[in-house]
Amino acid sequence: MTAPFSRLSDDDLATCVHCGLCLDACPTFRVTGLETESPRGRIYLMTQWKRGTLEFDEEQVKHIDLCLGCRTCEGVCPSGVPYGRIIEAGRADVEDQRRPSIKRAASRAALRQLVGHRGRLRAAGDATRLAQKLRLTSVSRSGRMLPKLAPRFQPPASNVAPAIGPRKHRVAFLVGCVMPILYPQSHDAAVRLLQLAGCEVWFPPDEQCCGALFAHNGDLEGAGRLRETNSRIYDAGQFDALVVDSAGCGAHLKDFYPALKNRVKDLSEWLAEAGLPEPKRDVKMRVTYQDACHLAHAQRIKKQPRDLIRAIPGVDWVEMRHADICCGAAGLYSTLEPDMSNRILQEKLDDLAATRADVVAVANPGCQMQLEAGLRKRGSAMKVLHVSELLARAY
Ligand code: SF4
Ligand code: SF4
Image (tube, rainbow, N blue to C red):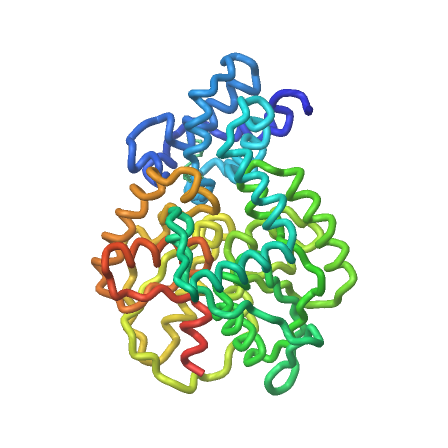
């Protein structure tokens, strides 16, 4: 076991000047109004534990558990607090100190034994797809949240998809762990858009989960092992950019894979740079957009997806109130902290309803699943589409 709270950095913690400007942007503070459920409160708690001036207390850890890791606080902090790094290190430190719990052990085991093994995860996806076909649907919350699964995303046998028209770039594409199972149509559309933008798309063979869910869950060792495997694979390839259509994975790759840092690009970021051809078709829909926290706050990308959507002919664009506030999905959070997740979701659904949009566009599978489940429960006809699917409708 490492020394208590040795992963948390004193320098990182000291960047907080306790101004409180982040409080109103924090979804858990907005719901509870409690200092302990705010970024400032959580940083204070972790600082005292690290200094040894506050006894570690299992009850207080709940305030750390309730953090979504959405990093909205990071985006608004005038002092440049690296909150994402603080909460990931803090969670890993807390895991070493706290009493074991079945729920947390199960989530860690599920990540290590399932998500960290591509073959097992795909087999589980295939079994779930079959169960859905036979209407043997799960009664668990996470089972009810699942979308209807289409056939899994398959890269071409050659692991390369050619550019449509003259080749301008060669990009690698992150297939990832859950995305090819839950939302294969988003990947299909993303790859087609890349081809239309003149990119030859390479699918790194044997690539594993990037480790984002592990790090988010306080398992930095598990995330590190995946990084080692993936780094070897990426090192062996040649590409201008590694394009990612899942915001959580993109943020993790940018933060956690220093050798790749400048070449990791969110799909919207890359398409805005590479340029798409003129759209061929009108998409007559009223459309709004939900910022993914790990795109808007961790990667500071808000403009590109909006510009791409607004450039689609026929789209009736409507900006949503609080679009950059978390929807409550946050990786495994909706499963581990369902009550808080649901309270945050309800405000989001009210804001969505007020837009009277036909479609809400998203850039992350967790947000998509959370919004779909919430809208379904309310009986709403609003559709949730990945930005890639919406853009692809114009071609
Ligand atoms: S995290 Fe940033 S915004 Fe929040 S209290 Fe600390 S310095 Fe202020
Ligand atoms: S990461 Fe999100 S939930 Fe956690 S303290 Fe920051 S704003 Fe609040």
